[in-house]
Length: 183
Image (cartoon, rainbow, N blue to C red):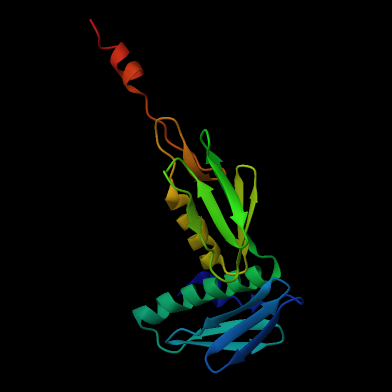
């Protein structure tokens, strides 16, 4: 059984939690989220704490209790503070702009690429930096990965869209690689 799931999960004062019909619903300043209570696990909400218990000690139940604990903690963090992913664009002529809620990427193709973020995800563009934010951690990560997938960084010049702080592994070009072997 998960060590983190053994401890009660504390719900902060600024987050409202409800347990009803197999769902834990959280609401806070960033929005509303709900988490389905997984099979073989029971949840109890009492005095601002959520305690999880195994109903059946089979392998799937032990896996579900840890997963449910992580989902609950992510939901509480999301509705209270939110999650942010920052993407950077590198390359001559690479730019991003907003048309309403749609992000338009000009990344060296013959046409601009448009991406409509899902509901609950907010995208902000500042020069060559794209900020993806929202309450649901999974949706924020999915939206950021889809934007990155439009033009991932290439290994020779490093041009493309990458996460802030991501290390792009660079390769030596033909001239550098062939210079030492010529006789």
